[in-house]
Image (cartoon, rainbow, N blue to C red; front, side, top):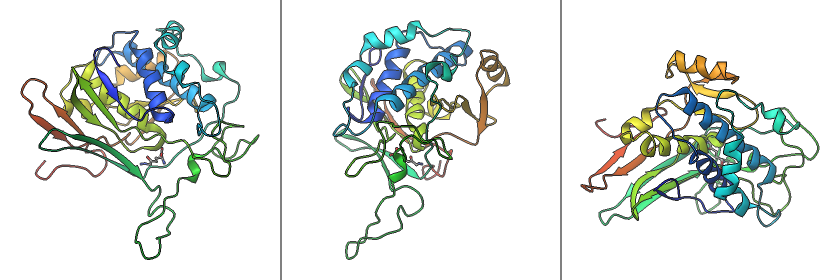
Length: 298
Ligand code: DON
């Protein structure tokens, strides 16, 4: 749950589900206001905690014991929330000396569907990179994916992209890599309200998070929630990526003054979503125009 909403997502042991839950649980301890630097700072700090735990604890549940009960508990989140300083960023290195993390690329897609009977589907899928691994299964005609770089690749080594040392997500034979994909359905009073998700590799969780915050905390329309500028923090590298030319300079400066390193990126995520009006039942399908998506006639 998040406030008086119910969130259906990838269940544990999915890393995305655990991280999204942890971040939402932390945020429940605050009132979040739109266009408010303090709220944005709190959101960033919550992201930092979520992704710190992701890299410390999460990997294939058949290989590592996942403390999901602890990570998703409201009490744990409350304790973390108490450590957030409203005027100062916590430097990520203070949380751990090991500054390694890993990057992911940008070739995934998400779609949200509702049928005439009100059944809803939130679907994120990926083969990674253009044409996945480039190999088609003979006689069947589908491409094999290329997800191997979702693993941390080498033990005890920080490589080019700072792969984590001895991560629970370390590559091993027969092991499943972590995924950030976070198809999500938000319910209000037991009925689907928001169907969302996104591509974007490691930024996916934070994109989905911000669509949820837009609709629930800021009470925006889905269109506004999708269009609202996004930011992203993944614990390491210790910086906030923000969408270029979308944020008010005053807000960005205020985040800087709290000690955040800011890096502008072209865009974050691509969250094609649906909102179902709880009163009228009218269904609103909204494309995210950041990447290539728009509805016919949009
Ligand atoms: O499963 C994952 O988390 C990644 N393989 C997803 C990659 C991705 O989203 C690339 N997107 N645009």
